[in-house]
Image (cartoon, rainbow, N blue to C red; front, side, top):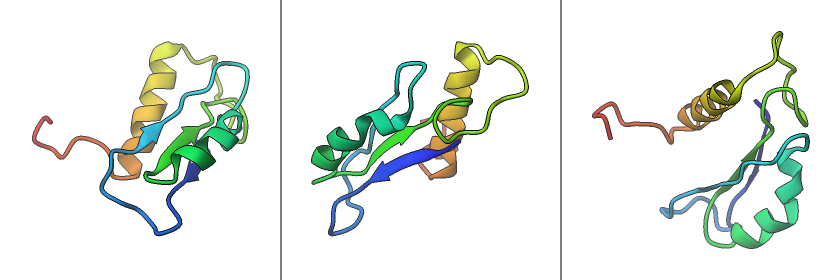
Length: 87
């Protein structure tokens, strides 16, 4: 999954990242200007859901659970998933 990301010029901080999910059929690029403003004090992540923007087209039409699963996997890959303790 392709991710549009913006962070403060000073680098990552300890604030909770903001995740912006685009409507279909568009892309996370929709939030580019918003990201620039919000990234003054936190990481902002705007994924391109499967089949949209720069993300790879899936082999079968995804349903909402598939889109949600893909977003969770992307955030997990960035280290923003559960810590393994169920939290």
